[in-house]
Amino acid sequence: MLKKFWFLSIIIIIAIILPFIVQSSYYQHIFILILIWGTLGVAWNLLGGYTGQVSFGHAAFFGLGAYGAGLLAFHLHISPWWGMIVGPVAAVIISIPIGLICFRLRGPYFALAMLAVGEICRLIFTEWVPFTNGAMGILTLTTFSSKLPYYYIGLVVLLLSIYTVYRLMASRAGYYFVSIREDQDTAESLGIPTTKYKMYSLIPSAFFSGLAGAFYMNYMNYIEPSIVFSLPDVSIMIIMVVILGGVATLWGPVVGAIIYVVLSELFRSSLGSAHLLVFGVIVCLVIMYMPNGVMGEANKIKKLFRRKGTHIGSEMT
Amino acid sequence: MSYFEVKNLVKKFGGLTAVNDVSFSIEKGKIFGLIGPNGSGKTTIFNCINHYYPLSGGKIYFKEKRIDKLPTYEICKLGIGRTFQIVKPLRRMTTLENVMSGAFLKTSNITKAKDKALEVLDFCDLFRHRHFPAKGLTIANKKRLEIARALATEPELLLLDEVAAGLNPKETETAMEIIQKIRSSGITILIVEHVMKVMMGISDRIMVINFGKEIARGTPQEIVNNQEVIKAYLGESYAQGK
Image 1 (cartoon, rainbow over the protein chains, first blue to last red):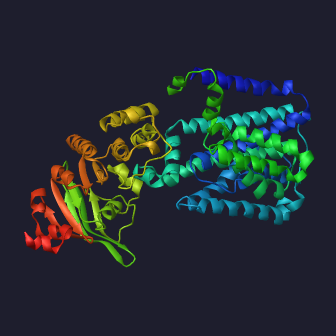
Image 2: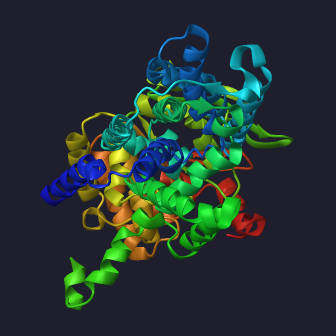
Image 3: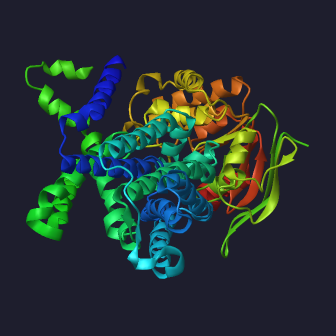
């Protein structure tokens, strides 16, 4: 427990001083992308990883968050930072009817419904030009010239999402989420109102996806429907990131986000849009050899290194 | 009115009537056995009681409250726990976590739930397996885990669905001891079982069903001598040839 505490403290301290060590604004941009993807992964993982309700359309929540912020600036000419409140709330409001309808059913209905919702959102925001400015997107002015404020806001958002998931999973709700994932009949027979608890998992998940979206809007200052509501580049990529890092692990999505963002930046210049191929191959390898993702197999990886110089018996503990 | 009562229960799957007009009642603190050949509708009755299936007809009362319209989790909250014949462990959770998931019904406090779960695990002789993932348990232990998980919800009425099926004689013995212990703690039991040694040894009353219909009811002694029952289990010639 104490070891865990120190480990966590060191990670947070490193995260805080990192932008002072690496002052290149390009690298800081990469860090911020990692923070956004990490938040998205953590949010998806709560619902898809722990509760077992796989969503193919988290771009809907991400995009609603982003447009929540963007539309405030576009129509009301107020700071898009207000979107950090409006965006997530909009995502939650949309998530509630979807959950209430789909969670009464079992099987792939929720996944498919979310796929549809993501695409519906993309089409609405593309076609409804008077309200959303359509495919021209929304452009706002940069608030800060330095990357530093963005980095720290992103860090707070990510840590907040991780802390929320951590607290949820360390409570009764966490046990109920995993029970629902493992066997819904058993969960019901143990007195767990499964539809209700799936909602308890969906709402924070939608909230933090929306928050990541609102932050994305504020950071990038430009959004258009085909970016924020993208099926392959957002909805599916979140799932890949979480699978890579470790489904149903607290830090897995962050590890996945680091690998994804770093890889795509490394290969973007040399391979162009084919840079995703490299990521795809790595995801395949991870699924084949580390089916629980990097963090899920952390003990296996640790053991590989630890085996040298220790007695065989020491593993029995 | 009785403590627990099933009135004219009917369950149809399309054209097949799996349970046809079955009624019975259970006194508080007793063990009521339900037996019948394979496919006679025993598990279907269980699934109707805890509303895993909606009923086609009939009523179910528990402590004078009609429960056949309530969702499964509400029925558990009222105090009816069940086990599954085809074991359904929460596979990737440890044995302890499995039981804790049940214990959370009565408390939202982690420590309290854990204490309760450990107590139940000890009761069911699973204590030493508490840190193993449930998917790795032997079938005997998985059956006991089913009981432990149901007990953790602190039920007043426990539905046991073939908890001794597929166990060796030693394990069957242990299962019987656990059932006896549960009974002496004051819990009413409705049990379905094929292992006659178990049924005859512990039941206060037994009901026999075949093709979804009741064919006999009585004490274990009355049941073993009943011609209808012998016919259903062993065939016409045995019933007459004695």
